[in-house]
Length: 594
Image 1: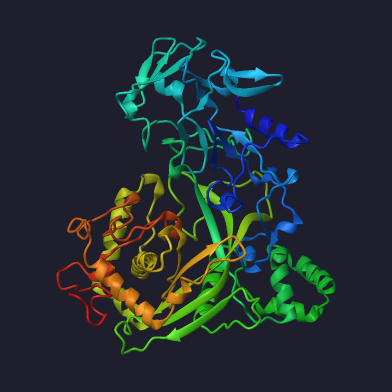
Image 2 (image 1 turned 90 degrees about the horizontal axis):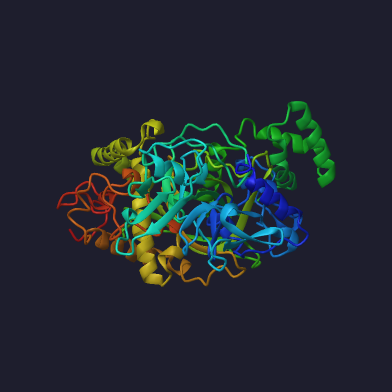
């Protein structure tokens, strides 16, 4: 019981302290993307896990206005992570609990081996006095979002008889001549010995998850998922699920503005309560109650939360990016200057509209997280919980920036995605993903040829922009618009400071510049240094989620990609034969190099 209650005791002690100790500082944006709830934070020679939202204290001054995103996520507000103040700190708890001493090689739980100073433990071995303890390099996670210490005792004694009630003390030694897991040896005082060879990866531990959520409390959930051994610093220990929305300027009446603000409070309310709430809000915001009720009824059966609402946000962005939004007062958060591309130009059969997005504001909210494998996209809920109880707010940040929007000709995209070549490539990828998926994963969602095409083209153009503008690829992000009737790509850069960026990216948002980008991307896509292996690959990447895509051609930094470098196929752009047949670009760009 003491082991299971250790973390909540640590959290309560931290929260109740008048001046809690500051272990480290991170940027607010990192609390959404890198060190969010449930993520591990390395601090010098120690390791901690970020506590859940139950222990955060959002402040009214940190509220971020983005009602469309709030409504789609089913919350009443989005708040910046706590800033640099005593009441704004985020609690963390020690994790992993298992540590070892590099001097005496003891491997044990922290409070059993750590020295004490007054009434608190310090990160020092009580046997060696001066030696700092090192947190376990390995943890165990499950696909349902739980995490626990690596089961060292079970692993060491697997295949050995273990006497219950007998004291077992472990030691860990490393062979300096062997850098593999086979060079890490565990030894128990009972005589059992074993290396860590084969301890990591799917199916390695043959144990069911204990349902531990150390970032929340000591309560264990019922979980039957298989544990997976992972390195503590591995990227698949924590995948943040971040949803975002670009603020697009829309002309709203005062009544519609009020309705947009109060909609999150109306979600899920009974009909009688809705009428009462609308009456209260109408008086509070000084608008006509009947007009507010009429505006609410006009929404009819519109979806207020979930995947459908998120698609509505993307649809509004897609429409706005193709319209003129001039800069008038200098205070605009969204400025777009679209230009039509001549159909007789070199890429006129492919590109329809190009927009210089000189200014944009994006709000990013952390909705949850996944472990072992990323969530499947906007339609699937993340399995890692941000809190034990129900919260009507989420942590978020706002960033400012600029970019380039490219809208392809819808008739050409529709023609290509209906071709035999496109459907064959999509079905081939779906079969590969299904074969690589575990039995628990069930049926893999169908692969859309449109997504495959737009995503592959987006990565190709992103790499070209990075070379042409001087921005590192990791600072350029993509945003795909690939629903039925949509065929757009937004490539943009955004930062959390007030300046955003300096215009180097949106300057490329002209028909002439995009024509050069597309032709250059086509030229580079025709040949990869890993060909012919790359182009002829039946499946590549984690989960076999790509076809012809590798680090020499289409893969980009994961922070730049909406889909975690999945659903990519260079053949969609250039075909698979020497004549380029079937490729979207090779069959439509005039002057192709084939």
